[in-house]
Length: 303
Image (cartoon, rainbow, N blue to C red):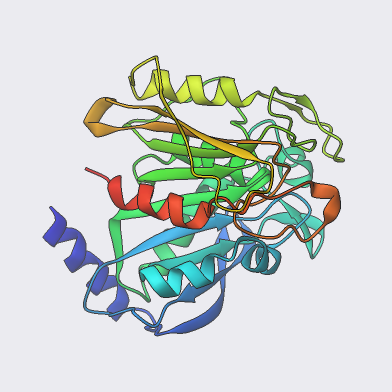
């Protein structure tokens, strides 16, 4: 089966314009709308080898270019060798965009934009120009983008191997994957924009957010993981006053796991990256979300 997927990927590439190392802006049609996404291809990319892909969704009111700087994922891509894709949401203003993650957010939700189909079209388009590994397509995102990654895990589990939401909960009451999807969720307990315990944040979305606990338990149930987690405290490297714990719900179907990385005192930020706005709260330097999520992704390719 894997050989067939590789052959198909190479066939698609023959019909498109091959991309090599560098950064690209792609335009596609999805659900009758012109949409765009950015692609970062690392120096290690070899067109003869299937390459993993990480989809990185920006937060509400941001855009793909913002997400490049906010997450720092290009640097990790260059070291680890995966391709990073930064989709652009939709909105009335060109640079203030959102994704429809279910109960959030803004223009995309109100206008019922089909961002699941958009993601499907991205992957189809990408496969025409690069040799992607269909078994190792992952999704992450910040805030509204994290909510979007949860929706993809539920509704596009035939294409998404695992997800790593940061600072954003699930946007639906339940999840309905057709296969187990491993989840690693990063969230600060002092997040005022997407509160750890749920409810309305101080942002402008007006969303009544689900709690982090609801998000985790929904996927523990969907993946049939153990109900009691193994809890470990991570090393306090930076002595920034924030304590990071990792709660792992293991032994799920096909080796699936659900992990919560809880940052005590952390804000609406990307762990390991300095926050671009002080109003977002504090960001711990005790861990790197990028390092931890990639280690997790490497462990959870699609079976």
